Length: 426
Image (cartoon, rainbow, N blue to C red; front, top):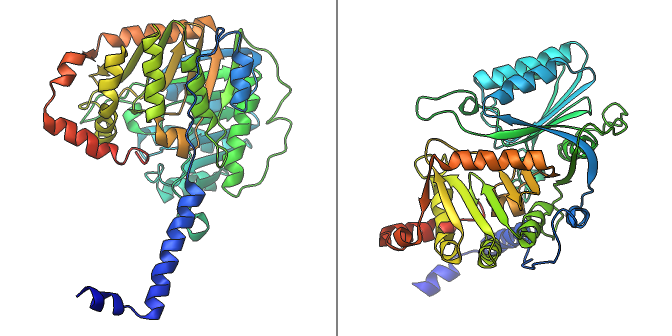
């Protein structure tokens, strides 16, 4: 039977099979990534070493920035107001955009801006924003907005289609920028039939760091086969506007760890007192789990907050992330599962001195595959606000203990191991 099966293939079929295998290998070779294995514990405080941290993440520290925290559904009102006041340009990039009330609010504001002569450029991820209808896209374009979808499914994108832009960016007149976790969907605007409104956080920035965020937008704009915008009004002369120092991590070089992954490993290694992480999809790779465990073992107060299974919109990510809970808990890491709804904000604070806010999840897809953005901020007021938010949310969490985790049934352990097999793609 085996001999017959092997000889039943024609020469052409054998060549086709070989060609497919070669193609699969080439796609893997193009898309493969190197993980960050940094587990050092450098001397010095993060505040003093911030220029080195930023430089190692392909960034530069800028002073004179203002940071305003935007929570929950307030995001839409703030964004619409700033778009209405725009005079020259509005640049928006987002992963998830769905038709609905939230989508209409943003689309109407963008169309009104374009109608009065503002240059409006919009990049949406082809997969994540599949809920944005062709009618809405036509509406944007009819009003004068430029709208392009990132990495559409077509032959030229073979080998890169799995690379998504997960960034959430809005830059207005080159002077005001929004970065954070908010998506353009009704789940972020109001309570839904199946779940309460999602909890999320973005920041509104002014100052020199906005120029860097504009550069991040331009990267995906150009990659979507759009032209460069060489415009002094999109990149105005930087002016100080506040007390915060800030830097941006966003680079994902081929063949190297992303700057976002490097940033997280560096600040975890630098931590001396505390690490507070809020993230909706906590699925660290082995190196990330080891870094957090080592921080806890050297006496750092490490606390992780992530949604409970009943609150998440991606239970397979949550189950896969459970596979690391045991080793983290034994090392002294404290894990809190948020119960009321999806906690979607992606934040980290270190030693009450520095914080990172952006679009990146704590998982392989964000660290190694997606295009992401994280803004690092050295500002006592901003960090204190994030710590207060974390403490307030603890009241709606269930803390996972080592004893109860070790007593979970065998079926749960097998489920975690199964879902973890696909951890790099979640």
